[in-house]
Image (cartoon, rainbow, N blue to C red; front, side, top):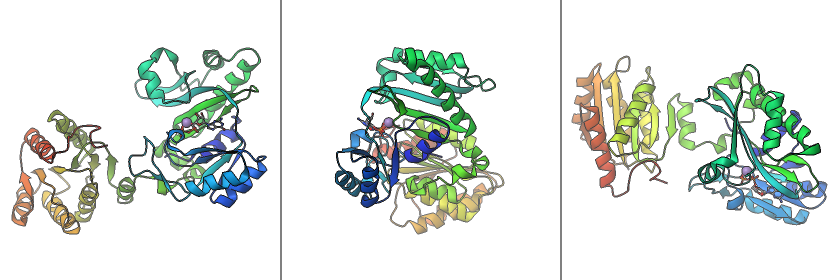
Amino acid sequence: MKVHEYQAKRVLAEAGVPVPRGEMARSADEARKAAERLGGKAVVKAQVHAGGRGKAGGIRVASSPEEAGRAAEEMLGSRLVTFQTGPEGAPVSAALVEEPLEIARELYLAIVMDGAARGPVVIASQAGGMEIEEVAERTPGKIMRIPIDPGLGLQPYQGRKLAYGLGFEGAQARPAAAMMGRLYSVFRENDCSLVEINPLAVTSDGRILAADAKLDFEDDALFRHPALREMHDPAQDDPLEAQASEFGISYVKLDGDVGCMVNGAGLAMATMDVIGQAGGGPANFLDVGGGADEDKVARALSIILSDPSVKSVLVNIFGGILRCDVVAKGMLQAVGENPQTDRPMVVRMLGTNAEEGRGILSASGLNVALVDDLAEAAQAVSRYSRASGIPSGPGAAR
Ligand code: GDP
Ligand code: MN
């Protein structure tokens, strides 16, 4: 679960990590008053669950309370489009009004859970402020990676190594090293999957502050943190993912254009691989789950059909507890609810009541190809996507 910058900074401040003075505002008037309390000048920052705001006009420097109010006025109620949001953007319903900083150096610091390292890894770089992916590609030597033993936590020597690596010397080295320890505590105590400070700002008067903050909490650990769960802002969620989670469907939006509906997470992943091998790109991961009924299948397919980037659909069902006739009826229900969609579907059904399921689909008059072989199914569906004239493959849809 992601949270807004203003919420992340509250969590950091409580853990003793220095952040700029600031207030959250939900109206132009609140922003103006906040800027007044900050002494007149302020930075107004649009609160969305995405980075890249700086380049997209979501960070505005105001030299008076009136200007801060106007900046907030323009932001609030609009949608901010950054390279991370996709073309539809994210709604702005809050702004963070902060003291302006005189930034001398912008550093990058993150703690992530790294599957390959089997634990947390601290990533740090003197090349902060910009996109770290770009730094990693062009100048990988500028990035430090320090794995943390989860049993020991971030050791003081690692804090010092990070501080020196980030260029802190003399009187600044000690507080910088201590800050590393505090950031790790934030990561650990809140079950974060990501703590990202970009930039970690060094001001011209020598202060070290988290000028931006992104926290991502592990969903499966949120039951331990009721206070964090309260911070959830559903308006920032992908609407289709939110709908799926409401119905207990595992759904993740991806970049390709072949929609897939599958039962079982393993089969769903294998299906995505096979689509990739056939030259297509999955538009989503979707596992309807073992105990799905007709309604749930209908919801799942509706979610896929309401994604405008889907050009064709692959249904891959291995009937066990979930019977294929139930899937077929659910599919008809979904198509009935989305009459405007005429995208081709390729269906592979095996297992319990597969014959009945195929019979229902064949008799329905739908634009459905019934295929037994998975590779053949993936080739067919990828061909349909290409025939629609829009290139498929990861990244092609956006
Ligand atoms: P992001 O683009 O969404 O990651 O938003 P950030 O909060 O990281 O802001 C982007 C950039 O705006 C930073 O890298 C800074 O260069 C600049 N910025 C943000 N806050 C301040 C501030 O208080 N003072 C100054 N001078 N620049 C700021
Ligand atoms: Mn940033």
